[in-house]
Length: 420
Image (cartoon, rainbow, N blue to C red; front, side, top):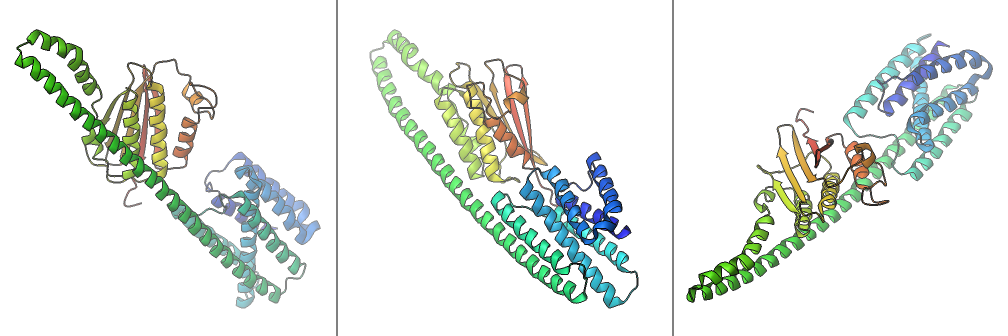
């Protein structure tokens, strides 16, 4: 009975480690372990080896309670049970070889503790996940693990012969090696797809950036042409000493142009300090578009932004959503204004975007609901997507505030310490 308690506790701790919440014990955990102990006391003697199937079902339910995906729960639980069988076989072999009577429990506890410590070190220092993001792949993996588990249990039966245990251990080792190779190849494919996607987004950003540069260059050529015509017209007034006509001409034709140029002032010098190409492309494209919609735009950056410490694609999408929301809220309003800035601090980089508010906004939690928008039905995916991006990046912190007539969003990207 004591051995069963140790095994169940070991399985519980390994599953909690794979779920990355080993130090977070809920009331559900306590109730579950208590029920497991009670079931062991009642049914272990009656069911014998079949009791392990009952425990398997219970731990599948336990894992499902946390992940809420059956294929993921099956993958995690079968992995842990197969690992438990491997530890059990290793303990049995070591006990037989060392010929230590009643030493099985001690060896099992030592191996369980060592494997648990090693697992938590790996989980803490890597992004290892016991499941795949693809649910179809999870279902196939769960089926293969179930076949392996059933083979082991049925092949041993009630006879726990040394040769059977050794052969099963070898088979398990080979299978686990194949699984690791398969998982490594899957990760390589995921990384390759991500790099291709990243390069495609980079090409799109560079193309958009070049198009915007070309548009500004054409605008500058038009302005030079108009400027030459202005000088010619002024020269004619000066030659005839028609100062009254010149004053009237200035107020009617030159003053509006001067005001428009001042209003559309764009701080390209500050944008040139953004050295991350994709970030520069997003900022340049969105702010230039805002200007074309007659929105007053400001951008501030005092020192070069050389790199970022977060997923670059996620940051591009996040900034795009924030700027799109600011543009959508400001377009069509005479006083529309967007203030944007980047502040490089010691331990973080802060992206600040704010815009004027021209209508009564609902509570912030309402704005973050998928599908909700103040501009119409089924348009409000921006803030919901933004929240998901921030939640999956540990280095990102998003602050959203409404301060009087100003809607402000502050996205902080924490720097990774060199000692981490």
